[in-house]
Length: 296
Ligand SMILES: Cc1cc2nc3c(=O)[nH]c(=O)nc-3n(C[C@H](O)[C@H](O)[C@H](O)COP(=O)(O)OP(=O)(O)OC[C@H]3O[C@@H](n4cnc5c(N)ncnc54)[C@H](O)[C@@H]3O)c2cc1C
Picture 1 (spheres, rainbow, N blue to C red):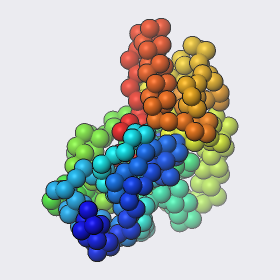
Picture 2 (picture 1 turned 180 degrees about the vertical axis):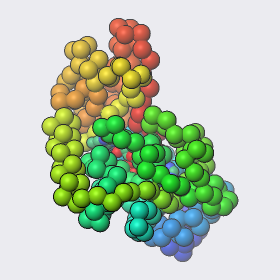
Picture 3 (picture 1 turned 135 degrees about the vertical axis):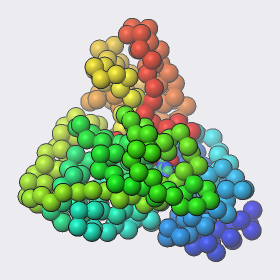
Picture 4 (picture 1 turned 120 degrees about the vertical axis):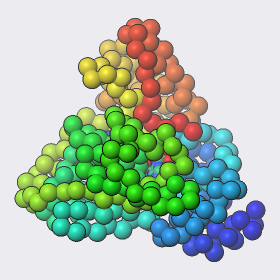
């Protein structure tokens, strides 16, 4: 183990041993992982991935805003993209490394009078996580701005174009093929008026603060919308489940599509609450809910 640890340092990483995921997730939930690795550069990221892939299971994370890790000890290595966050503007193209926070992408686009990411403002993840999830809000989805993605397929870096990435609602090829790691993303933007972009972004942020329980830890909307005309939050609310809790995991009083951590929630409690909601929805509406968040 010491040899692995030394090699990880040598490859240009910061490494934390037995690091609790609760320190990293927006849910403030999650037990310890064997290695929590923070590569300092994209090159370190790729060589570390190459080194570890023969040794143990690797999970790549961005800002950990859409995951619910187990409470138990996990014998895995986490590769975080948090320091892989270079961003470059070239005319109407933005080149982002996968760890660029969406917030940074939105703000820097606005500063450069570039329109295209106004509706992404307030989504708390990274570019990599947004591509993986095809994150979206207010009618906008990540896929619509993508020109290409550079991904590591475990052996080499490949370039993927939108038609190859199987984008659909909160889905992409990356959710299916876990061996593909998003390294860089080229987005298109259009010239716009800085003030108008800023106003739109602030409007969007205000809507989020009004509707979402941002004062509590959560992972955003727990469930995918099963079809266009089925609003999960409203359905859960109509079942009288707003405020319903198992331990410290609670259906938000503000937005029933969110489960919040009231303080000391465990992953097991969140999972039980998810199952409880799924069963109720199935019994009353005959609808099968799927989770949007990733459960480890
Ligand atoms: C308060 C709140 C509000 C939210 N609002 C929205 C919203 O409006 N719309 C929306 O779509 N989502 C929303 N989310 C969910 C979440 O922010 C997004 O899905 C976001 O895109 C996840 O990015 P991340 O970097 O946090 O991903 P993580 O949680 O770190 O990872 C999510 C998944 O992506 C994978 N992944 C991450 N980076 C890479 C990479 N470089 N290569 C390959 N796989 C990768 C991980 O392995 C994991 O499976 C919200 C979450 C919160 C907490």
